[in-house]
Amino acid sequence: MAVLDNVLEHLDDQPDALERIASCLRPGGVAYILVPNRWWPIEAHYSLPFLAWLPLPLATRYLRWSGRGSDYTDASYAPSYLRLRRLLARRPELDARFTVPGDVSLAEGGGSRLYSLGVSALRRFPPLWAISKAFLVVAVKKRD
Image (cartoon, rainbow, N blue to C red; front, side, top):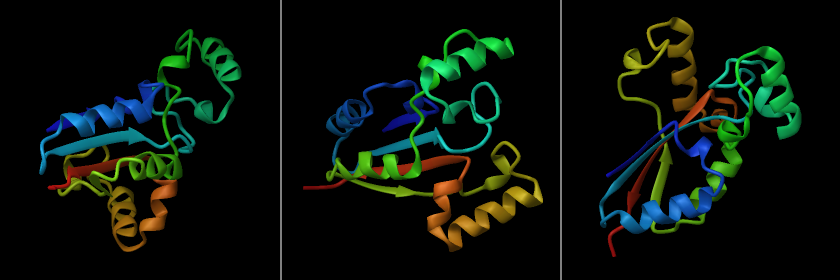
Protein backbone atom coordinates (compact mmCIF):
# COMPACT_ATOMS: atom_id res chain seq x y z
CA MET A 1 0.00 0.00 0.00
CA ALA A 2 1.12 3.55 -0.72
CA VAL A 3 -0.42 6.71 0.72
CA LEU A 4 0.23 10.14 -0.76
CA ASP A 5 -1.74 12.49 1.47
CA ASN A 6 -1.06 15.99 0.15
CA VAL A 7 2.34 14.94 -1.20
CA LEU A 8 1.98 14.90 -4.99
CA GLU A 9 1.69 18.70 -5.24
CA HIS A 10 5.21 18.94 -3.78
CA LEU A 11 6.84 16.68 -6.40
CA ASP A 12 8.18 18.28 -9.55
CA ASP A 13 8.51 14.95 -11.41
CA GLN A 14 5.06 13.47 -10.90
CA PRO A 15 5.29 10.96 -13.78
CA ASP A 16 8.40 9.47 -12.16
CA ALA A 17 6.74 9.39 -8.75
CA LEU A 18 3.72 7.49 -10.08
CA GLU A 19 5.98 5.12 -12.00
CA ARG A 20 7.93 4.34 -8.82
CA ILE A 21 4.76 3.81 -6.82
CA ALA A 22 3.34 1.51 -9.48
CA SER A 23 6.58 -0.49 -9.61
CA CYS A 24 6.62 -0.95 -5.82
CA LEU A 25 3.04 -2.17 -5.54
CA ARG A 26 2.30 -5.86 -5.73
CA PRO A 27 -0.59 -6.97 -7.94
CA GLY A 28 -3.72 -6.01 -6.03
CA GLY A 29 -1.77 -3.37 -4.08
CA VAL A 30 -3.47 -0.05 -3.49
CA ALA A 31 -2.27 3.55 -3.68
CA TYR A 32 -4.31 6.34 -2.13
CA ILE A 33 -3.61 9.77 -3.57
CA LEU A 34 -5.07 12.93 -2.06
CA VAL A 35 -4.01 16.14 -3.80
CA PRO A 36 -5.45 19.67 -4.02
CA ASN A 37 -6.89 20.92 -7.30
CA ARG A 38 -4.69 23.56 -8.91
CA TRP A 39 -7.74 25.51 -10.07
CA TRP A 40 -9.50 25.74 -6.71
CA PRO A 41 -9.69 29.50 -6.01
CA ILE A 42 -8.15 29.34 -2.52
CA GLU A 43 -4.69 27.73 -2.51
CA ALA A 44 -4.53 24.79 -0.09
CA HIS A 45 -1.27 25.52 1.76
CA TYR A 46 -1.29 29.28 2.18
CA SER A 47 -5.04 30.04 1.91
CA LEU A 48 -4.36 32.83 -0.56
CA PRO A 49 -6.89 33.50 -3.32
CA PHE A 50 -5.70 32.53 -6.81
CA LEU A 51 -2.10 31.85 -5.72
CA ALA A 52 -1.88 28.58 -7.68
CA TRP A 53 -3.24 30.29 -10.80
CA LEU A 54 -0.24 32.61 -11.12
CA PRO A 55 3.05 31.95 -12.89
CA LEU A 56 5.62 30.81 -10.32
CA PRO A 57 7.61 34.09 -10.14
CA LEU A 58 4.43 36.11 -9.53
CA ALA A 59 3.10 33.52 -7.07
CA THR A 60 6.32 33.73 -5.06
CA ARG A 61 6.13 37.55 -5.00
CA TYR A 62 2.46 37.37 -3.89
CA LEU A 63 3.39 34.87 -1.17
CA ARG A 64 6.20 37.14 0.10
CA TRP A 65 3.93 40.19 -0.03
CA SER A 66 1.34 38.34 2.07
CA GLY A 67 3.93 37.50 4.73
CA ARG A 68 2.89 33.83 4.66
CA GLY A 69 6.03 32.44 3.02
CA SER A 70 9.08 33.18 0.93
CA ASP A 71 9.02 30.74 -2.00
CA TYR A 72 6.04 29.00 -3.59
CA THR A 73 8.09 26.47 -5.59
CA ASP A 74 7.71 23.56 -3.15
CA ALA A 75 3.90 23.59 -3.22
CA SER A 76 3.43 24.72 -6.82
CA TYR A 77 2.92 21.36 -8.54
CA ALA A 78 -0.74 20.75 -7.73
CA PRO A 79 -2.34 19.21 -10.83
CA SER A 80 -5.60 20.07 -12.47
CA TYR A 81 -8.20 17.35 -12.95
CA LEU A 82 -7.20 16.85 -16.58
CA ARG A 83 -3.48 16.74 -15.79
CA LEU A 84 -4.02 14.18 -13.04
CA ARG A 85 -6.13 12.05 -15.38
CA ARG A 86 -3.35 12.19 -18.00
CA LEU A 87 -0.72 11.25 -15.41
CA LEU A 88 -2.77 8.26 -14.29
CA ALA A 89 -3.50 7.21 -17.88
CA ARG A 90 0.27 6.87 -18.38
CA ARG A 91 0.22 4.08 -15.80
CA PRO A 92 -1.92 1.41 -17.50
CA GLU A 93 -0.96 -1.11 -14.82
CA LEU A 94 -3.03 0.92 -12.35
CA ASP A 95 -6.81 0.91 -12.23
CA ALA A 96 -7.23 4.46 -10.89
CA ARG A 97 -10.56 5.96 -9.88
CA PHE A 98 -11.54 9.32 -8.47
CA THR A 99 -13.63 8.76 -5.38
CA VAL A 100 -15.17 10.53 -2.40
CA PRO A 101 -14.56 9.52 1.22
CA GLY A 102 -16.87 6.79 2.49
CA ASP A 103 -17.69 8.79 5.62
CA VAL A 104 -17.61 12.46 4.63
CA SER A 105 -18.31 13.57 8.20
CA LEU A 106 -14.67 12.68 9.01
CA ALA A 107 -13.32 15.12 6.41
CA GLU A 108 -12.49 18.73 7.26
CA GLY A 109 -15.78 20.58 6.89
CA GLY A 110 -17.50 17.27 6.16
CA GLY A 111 -20.32 17.88 8.59
CA SER A 112 -21.63 20.94 6.77
CA ARG A 113 -24.65 20.85 4.50
CA LEU A 114 -22.69 22.49 1.67
CA TYR A 115 -19.96 19.83 1.83
CA SER A 116 -22.55 17.06 1.77
CA LEU A 117 -24.24 18.64 -1.26
CA GLY A 118 -20.90 18.87 -3.06
CA VAL A 119 -20.10 15.21 -2.40
CA SER A 120 -23.55 14.19 -3.56
CA ALA A 121 -23.11 16.22 -6.76
CA LEU A 122 -19.71 14.56 -7.43
CA ARG A 123 -21.25 11.13 -7.05
CA ARG A 124 -24.01 11.96 -9.54
CA PHE A 125 -21.98 14.06 -12.01
CA PRO A 126 -18.33 12.94 -12.18
CA PRO A 127 -17.33 15.80 -14.57
CA LEU A 128 -17.66 18.08 -11.54
CA TRP A 129 -14.30 16.71 -10.36
CA ALA A 130 -12.78 19.41 -12.57
CA ILE A 131 -13.94 22.05 -10.06
CA SER A 132 -13.52 20.04 -6.88
CA LYS A 133 -11.36 21.43 -4.07
CA ALA A 134 -9.21 18.30 -4.04
CA PHE A 135 -8.92 14.89 -5.64
CA LEU A 136 -8.99 11.55 -3.91
CA VAL A 137 -7.78 8.75 -6.14
CA VAL A 138 -7.71 5.07 -5.30
CA ALA A 139 -5.40 3.17 -7.65
CA VAL A 140 -5.15 -0.62 -7.62
CA LYS A 141 -2.32 -2.40 -9.38
CA LYS A 142 -3.81 -4.80 -11.89
CA ARG A 143 -3.12 -8.50 -11.60
CA ASP A 144 -1.28 -10.02 -14.55
